[in-house]
Structures are given as C-alpha cells and as structure tokens.
Image 1: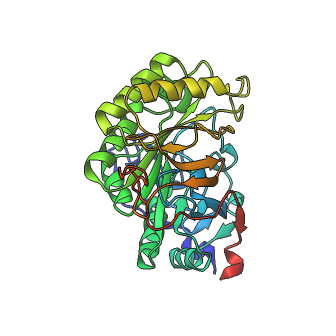
Image 2: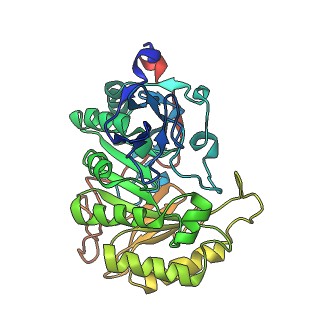
Image 3: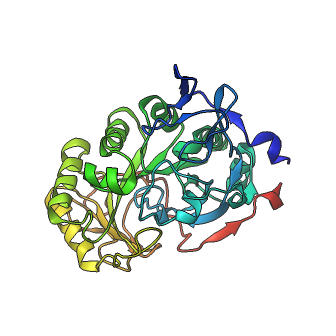
Length: 363
C-alpha cells in the first residue's frame, strides 16, 4: 500500500477568515493557519484553501491490550482491545505521560499503517472485542477514527475513544456518534490548571462529559491523574467528585491514577499511594459508587463491589481478573442489583498480556 497517496485527506471543520487565514474548528484551540502551516496538534494543516488531515491510515503502533488498561473497568471486562494511536495532540500538558507520541513532530514516528477495513478485519482475526483510539487523542484524527469505527461496526467490533474531550460541539457530535465507549481524561477541576499547565480550558471538557451523559448512549469512565501539589488537594477532589455526582450521576466510574515524573514536569515526585486512597474516600463519600486507584498496585481499591449489598463483583490484580460475581448481563449474583456498565456474556480472560501487532505484515 502506498501511504503517500492516502494519508492526506480533506476535512470539513474549518472556515476562512477575512485576513486570508483558515481557522480549524475541531477543537477550542481554533488554530489559524496560512498556507503550509500546521495546527498545534501537528496533524491538521492548511493545504491550499482547506484544512487537511495528514496522518490518515498511519499509526505510531498497534498493540493488543487488556480493556482495563484504557482504563475501562465496566466495559466488556477481561477482553482484549486492539489499540493504536497516531501522532500529535491538541493540548500541551507539561506532565504528558505519552509525550514521545503525543508531542511527536516528525512523521517518522508513524511506523505502521492500516486502512479502516484492514483494522476491522485484524480485530476479528485476533479475537479482539474492540478497537481503541488511544496513546494520543482521536479528536485530532477524527476522520480516520470515524471510518475505522464504521468498518468495525460492520463486523461486530466495538470502538473505544481515550480522549481529553477537548473538542468543539459539532465535531464532538460526529465523533461520538461512531463510538461505543470512552475514557475521558479530566486533567483537573481548575481553570487555572488547564490554562497554565495544559494550554486549554476546563469548560470544554465538562461540556463533553455533560454531552456524553445527556445525549448519547456511549459508555464512559473518567480518569484523573493526580499530580502532587498541583491538582490533588482535598478541596479540588471534593469539588470535582461533587460535580460528577450532581451532573453525571453516581454510576460513572472514576479512576484516580498516579503521576510519575515525565516530559516537562520532572521536578515533581510520584504520587503517594495515600493521596489516591484519600481521593477515592472523598469521592465515595460524595456518592460515587465506582471509584478506583490506578498506576499503582492495589488489589483492594481496584475491585468493583455491589453498591447495594457490598458483594465483591469483580476482583482485579493489576489487569488480571480474579473472582467474578456478575451475571452475563451485569447483575449482582448475591442480590440481583444491576452494576452499571456494558456486560455481555461471561468475563474475558485476556489478563495482563500486551501483544504488539505489525499491521503492514498482515496486508
């Protein structure tokens, strides 16, 4: 396959400005470009009189992961997911944990490739229940993501978006109309944090969360990476979890995950385990039923329990499932209460395996 012929495709979310520039309207950053300029995301660029996506069909790598790694704990537990990303990002987080991919400014990062139908076929052949757009944000390669999702639906494979949710209303509506599940990375519950550490705005992300809850059937979970002395105060956790409960309800799973020093924030210490435990306690006291800790080994606070009777429903040790006390359609075996999520049939047994996939060699 000649990727040079297929990796550049036209897009539709942009408009012309009076000064001759073209503004990209995919995300609130609203990059304004002259000829041959790229947006901050790196992959959307002006070419002639339009904005194009320059990475269609190209990827920084494909890998089969456990679905719990996204993290999604209430979506087809124990199943394998074919994961991939491209390059670039529309935020500028100083603490980025995937900076080698999301901050890439060279197309050499995109070492593999696959057209949508090839990906869908590979997912079926490899026994994957879903395909995940991850490692960098699918918002910036939404044309490719939507086409992959459509191809996957044709063969009964679900799709997952791992995203910061920093997207404008119209492209948000289109992107999530193709998606089955999502993990939204809520960076903090502070406009100051978003502005000075991420180069974005909190409001747009909260709008995405509200949209998913109010207007879609997308199953979604929230991740909050806790950074010492930046977004981990009890007050901020209290305000965030109260907002989730009041606006989205008690059943949205929240994952508090540990930060490790990386990219432009190497002066910070890793998140103490007790900080995660404290955040989880606050969130549960505010009414959230499913709150987890991540990026640390914790075989208790990673489990799912029935909110009605306390029965252990899903036992987890990292990404390996242990005891499982749910019916095939997600009801507690002890009291019959429904556990929120997407449960279809017996649990999977993929465990913690990570299997790289070379797509070019399959075509």
